[in-house]
Length: 208
Ligand code: Z5A
Image 1 (spheres, helix red, strand yellow):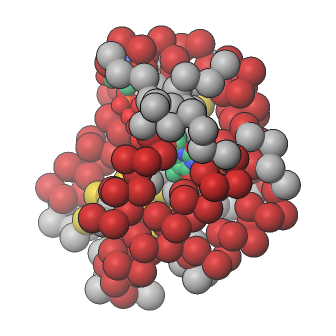
Image 2 (tube, helix red, strand yellow):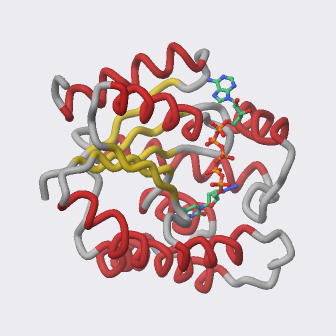
């Protein structure tokens, strides 16, 4: 595949959506072809699954069903959008991807990591990020930022310990895969974070 697949990860309120917008605009201004997308979601079917997953009324959703729904949405997203874009030579920027499942369902819900990683293989068919940026902030800071935006979805309602496990898992993944996964200090002002992100991305996509 000719494209470049970049994923943005981190705890809630870490600022990855803000950074995806800034990065996407900058790459587009350089004349590059960019797809900005998100998980769960990114296609009509996957967005329907997103509605189930984030609805705070769905308190009965069990951890395994939750895991399978995230992976089902991903399978549809990869097949319908991400893989064709990469084959067409596009830079794909994705707000969350499989590492979120490893962190939230694996570490957060305490499901076996091997099961989660096997499902990634099924859902992605081997389509895997070239670069993953983990936006790291203390959990309290992230939750405060997310709360300021107003709405609380099903996972944001989890206790602080859940979010601490998620943060620790993102940092563990980064330590285990230093070539692919880079950690950025996202407690800095957005403009400072954006500069670090751009340098990481330019190192992989090259000069315009
Ligand atoms: N989830 C999962 O469990 N398993 C999976 O496999 C996947 C996802 C793929 C998706 O919700 C939920 O699904 C998510 C994980 C779970 N759990 N929760 N909750 P979502 O897409 O609605 O939300 P999110 O992914 O958690 O992101 P978010 O709420 O949109 O936040 P963000 O992208 O990290 O931050 P932001 O929107 O860019 O910024 C939040 C606020 O902070 C906003 O007011 C900004 O202006 C402000 N901000 C941003 N950057 C800064 C800096 N640097 N300084 C100060 N303030 C800032």
